[in-house]
Length: 193
Image 1: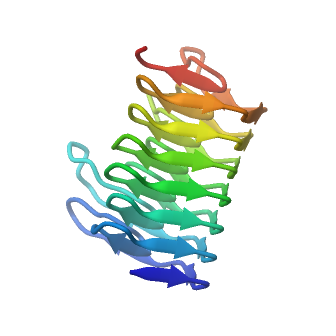
Image 2: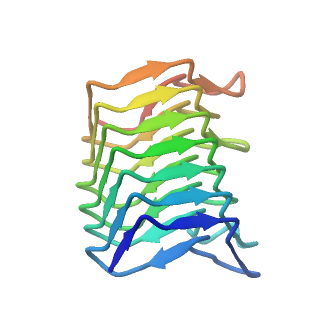
């Protein structure tokens, strides 16, 4: 499926258990999201034991997310703007501003071999105790290059929380922070090799 030049505002996905994708749930592979605006979308559920989220988009694998704007989207679990549930996603030339989640204020990457490049992340927050990745939570073996991270915040990893074997190169980090005295990694927190 292809989603081009749409505007998604104040859409809500909620129920008493798990919820995915405040604006779009795209569990399949190979979708394209290009030139869209996502603002004020919410994915909210009550379960604290099951992975869910994606305030704007929940995506499967090998999706292209290009030239979109994500502002003030939120979830009370994973991925304030985007929850990428598998491998091979390309996320490039997007703007992520003021998105909020428990973990991965803007993006939550569960799989590997994803590429995040040339995006702007500003004022995204992973909110709560022991939260991770104010802008990005990345599992293992992803590539994060040529992005700008400004004023993002989390308990651990103000901008990025990353697992093992990720490549993080040619990015700009400014004014990112941990929000608790016990927090670690004002810009980046690495878990593993």
